[in-house]
Length: 336
Image (tube, rainbow, N blue to C red):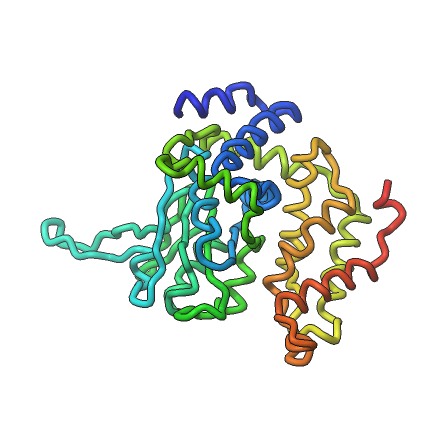
């Protein structure tokens, strides 16, 4: 582990609330030093990592999607691999292939780029659906099967995928099953004027990633994950999360609602959100804060709802989720 990582996590020990806050604040500060003016995106990305999910960053080119993914990866002293998805990328390039060894006279496995703690799948929707699907088993089961043999990916394991909106040329829509594997989707958005001007002054000659050093080791990430996993979720909060998911499945403007996996991941993410706020229990605000990031990319509006009043499908889903959140009653016990 590097000296920087030792400084960030040396006091973590068996992990206390103070130790968790110290290390996570160090990660947020490190990534935030590279991604100017986007604290919400940085926090949500960290939530996804510590909740053992996978992150999808969707936005137009040039707003810092890959930079955020690389900054998060660099802040952890772990193995990092980047895959540039292109139309000619093959599934074997991702998962690995069996190659015949003429000396040993047998096939041996050559691991693909998926075998790393943090995998950056850059512009994932520029490759064919067949290649995209090569990630499915690794993302869900944390293993890869090639020629009938199972190979486990290292822990911790995080896929950070970036993609351009479907309106951009040369993109392929992610299948529903693939989207459902991502715990959270975020959009960067354009920076405000102050942040963009600061970027011009600071990055004229220096790449901020070159000055970024790890603040926590991969092994100590496991302690952070375990601490967040132990955050208490009251039955009333669980019922609230289920009610929100059920509401998406019966909404007249949605053709596809949130899956049970989405409900599970919503609660897992809410635990980390609560831990980052210094609490050992989840409150309704944690659930509602993560409702759109966890649910929105899984929902499919009806044709009528998606094109109503000239709005985009994303706008329609955002409106629907706001209405659902307002209509589902928060149990009294959950407010305490």
